[in-house]
Every structure is written in C-alpha cells, then in structure tokens.
Length: 122
Image (cartoon, rainbow, N blue to C red; front, side):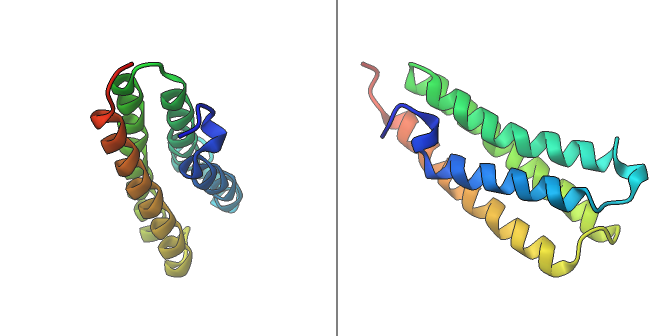
C-alpha cells in the first residue's frame, strides 16, 4: 500500500463523489443552502479528508481511527441524502446512484480499517 492518499482507490471514489454532490446540491432550493446543502457538502468533504489524514498517520491504529471517522461520515451522508430524496430534492434514480457509490466507499473503508487494525506497528 502506498504512503500517499492519492494512491488509494477509495480516496478517488470519495473525491469524485464529493465533486458530484457539489453539483447535485447546487440544484437544491436556495433556502436549503445553509441547511441541508451545507450538511451534505461538509459530510462529503469529511469522507475524503479523513481518508487523506488517516493515510498520512504513522501508526496503523491512528490511521484506522481516521478511516472510522470517514466511515461515520459516509453514514451521515447517506442519511442526509435520504432526507433530500424524501423532500423531493433528489429523484429516486439519483439517490440510488449516490447511495450505491457511498456503499462502495463504505466497503472499501471497511477493508482499510481491517487492514490497519491487523497491521503490525513498525
């Protein structure tokens, strides 16, 4: 595994998702700009920033902690997107696409967490 976060497929997936969520939320009602839009964007950014920070940590358990934080933001984001769908800001198809992509990021994070927890400190 490389030492640069940009070597991680999960970071690239999270980054593309963040960019797409910025575009999607720009179409939400203006009154949601400081509410749901802000929450969705912050959670999306948190996913990829925690991956980057975790990859930059020296000790495996430190890395795992940041990957866990990232996974928590994935769940936060899934819940926020459900709210957006239920309020009619997202179509079912768009929600399904974003949710599936979040599931992939979550599964890849689970793999990283397991790997880091099992890694021997050097």
